[in-house]
Length: 257
Picture 1 (cartoon, rainbow, N blue to C red):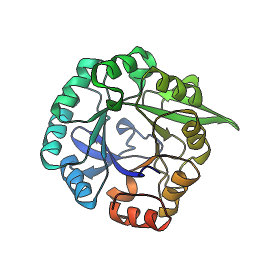
Picture 2: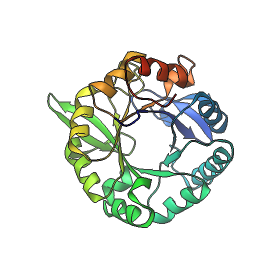
Picture 3: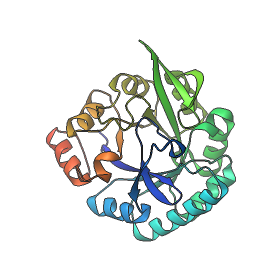
């Protein structure tokens, strides 16, 4: 069995790490300032994080330059793989982030509006560099739909079908964000995570809902995820990455200690 990865996630707004609940937005006062992204990344690197994900939620030209600087500074001080997403709309945008020190590029709304970008990115940089992030919300007892624009706009697409298409287009990894569970700390959405994990031939990273150590083990075991993304439990000092990994090892899950 492949090693299960533990990945802290940093939402960066105007150069600072923030945290919201169910995709809360800055203009609505729904974000809480957490700290400096580079210092947090260094902390998680020292704790043994397998990777680090940065999401640029500023969505502006100025924000892009700020994020490039964040990636450069982090890459100089950390040795774990870095993934960056947010506002990436072309292979040139991808190149800028990879050149700054990122190892993977995460695309979401841009993949929905121009699916060929998945194929173009995979062709230019390799599938291992292209991550498709999917924001899914349960809209009926047995249906999850894909939302775009930070979880604000429904696309009408079935989440499982879109994940399968993204994989077929060349995505090397799928990040599944549960809008319903995001920031609630009430547990991951196990059902949709398992369905997507069973249908795609690449790793699936579960995101949204981590509140207890049991939640993380559940989504890896019952949800069949390959990795977990978490924010609040790390940012606010409830658990360290090392504590999460020790717990997972105790559940007989393979982790890099």
